[in-house]
Image (cartoon, rainbow, N blue to C red; front, side, top):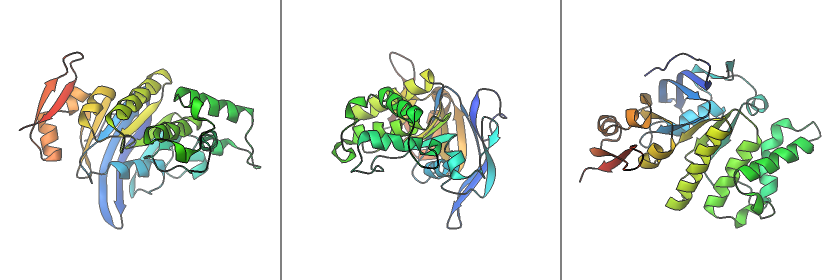
Amino acid sequence: MPETPLSIGFALHIQGLTAAYNGCLVLEDVSLDVPVGQVTALIGPNGAGKTTLIRAVSGTLRPRAGRIMINGREITNLPPEKRACLLAVAPQSGNLPGEFSVYQAVMMGRTPYLGWLGYPGKRDHEKTLHALELTETLHLARRRVASLSGGEQQRVLLARALAQETPVLLLDEPTTYLDLHHQVTFLQLVHRLAHQNNLAILAALHDLNLTSLYADRVALLSNGRLQAVGSPAETLTPANIQQAYRLAVRVIHHPKNGLPLILPEA
């Protein structure tokens, strides 16, 4: 389902995105706007195309058709070093060099800005320290990445992405392999960063209840198409969930904030 045209307040604009793997169509004609200062959750069953969409927007997968724009600038054909100045990606944990210190790993986010000699300057060190502070990982700066827990590594990946200093941040199922405590604290941090730092964040998520609690908008993918987009209350309906996930559910309201909570039917 198409969204409204690009307007002020939308940092990332995806229009008519179609993508395939090995000749097999995975995404078809997906249009989505990601607002500044909000978390937009990308949900859907396994194989719906969430990771494919993240990869197509990030540039690791070339789409068959469609336009991807950031702040009105077409990025589809930009070289990687220029695209890296406009959007950053925090993948699932386990994608960090284990022998690096946390500080070195986060400094990697400054790579698009380093001079031809590749030496970091004062601004690069300042931005690295700031990213560590924002993610509450400064106390880990001298630790080796391999010594960190899954939750700590996920925060370091987020810090590395923040060090890139981009208006758009993509998170590819960042809470996978984390326990409930670390899922909640991580998503609380992501929500706070979006609102306080005016970031446009697109996050592929699995847990529908955590999506309801921490996402401002929800985009539901099903069979490679966008089935619904809107607030958690507008998107997380029994009809939408049953159609996408083939599961009958009951939606109740959270006793404190009124947000939808999803319970599978017995």
